[in-house]
Length: 170
Image 1: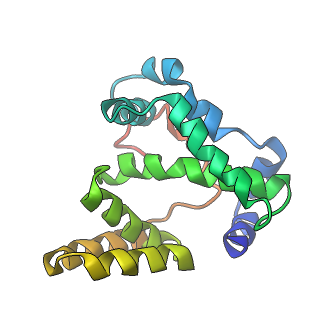
Image 2: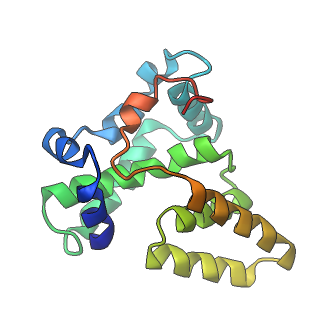
């Protein structure tokens, strides 16, 4: 995670994000605001996906509290903000990739994440999952990894700004 944070710090726009520390959690948790966005928007697709699976804004907040337990791993307010922000991105990636929130979709998103940012924990999780998966799943995981490898989503991407844009444009 420290290496990921350091990579983030070198990206254009990262310094400004660290100064502002916008709360992606607060933006994604504001379901009434997201519901007011146009139907074809990224933010509307996000809130529709969350609600279709019975996830409410409070569930997102509870999940983000897990980041607080990582204070020993990545100490300091900048790193804690970074961890919380990255925890929020998972479901946004479900919307962007089209991977469902079932076993196959979560596994595919994990493979995509490994291509996008190969953290050891993600890779270990993917290998463990793949070891128990049927062989026919492997080509899908390889394709998801390749999609992630080809994706150019900087860690400093301003997700808050993207929510109002049409999903197809994002």
